[in-house]
Image 1: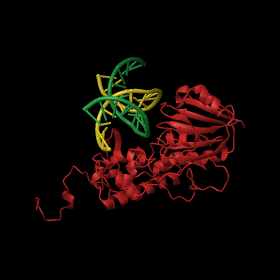
Image 2: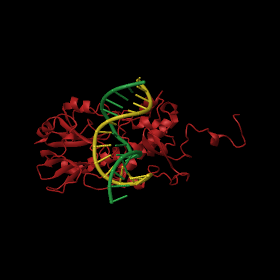
Image 3: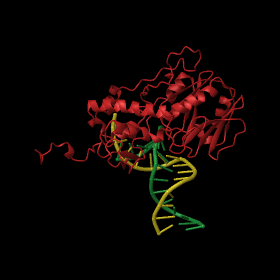
Image 4: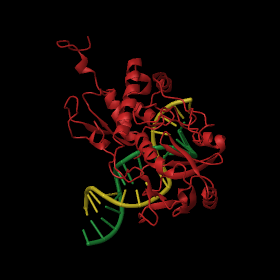
Length: 318
DNA sequence: ATCCCTTCCTGAACGC
DNA sequence: TGCGTTCAGGAAGGGA
């Protein structure tokens, strides 16, 4: 499941080969992977295009092309983008090949066919394409060039000069999204309008780090809890980037490399194992039709009476 | 407006 | 062995 750290890693591994290269043609093995317009239009638009830059917004990879066009890639569940040499073997789930003029082939592989390649035309087209995305978590990371779409850039033509930069997540932006909401906090965090880039793995990790139970309603969070959650989101994502992503099954970077963050996860898919903080057994719930992993001791279930918080010796309601 | 459900899609892991 | 069922889930769209 490529989430923000995985897409960021793909972006970084793809950039050295792709930026400055020209596309020769698109070969749509499964035309359904084109997100907008017709397959022939897609092929005609891509042929001869030059990649002028590459960036990420939420879980979208944005490949800037000349003449103010962008190729937006969303990998959804099982999508992969891999740079291959000319004539490379074809995976059985290969959906498209973007042939470069230098002979490289960018393979789009996607077992479950949820991923999409979408062309955006002009800055307005790109804004429309990204219209449902909320604020971007600004991740501090030594490797990061920290260049986001629309940010000042002295390197000439990145392809993003005229693109407005994203808003950035703050504790206040989270608070205003959660205020008055009765839905579980996990559902709100999976909504890309709250924060762009979180998915099932990093939501569970962030909620555990913040000691917040996923079934707590958004509106029930106190200000200090939202501040903790804000920092926990940043920490969980930064760790994911540092470890080049979480490879539980399908995920690979653009050079075919695996990430190592799966060995650093605190709760995700660790049900039955001890909590790294208190040793209690991690349990698995379903929230928003998603497998959800919590420490029942560190993350207090809102439906449980708060007996452990009662001072020793005090019984009853008081 | 908010929330929940369904749809898309394949393959692994089940149960009988 | 083989068949059918369930599960995994990101995001769009629809209904309440």
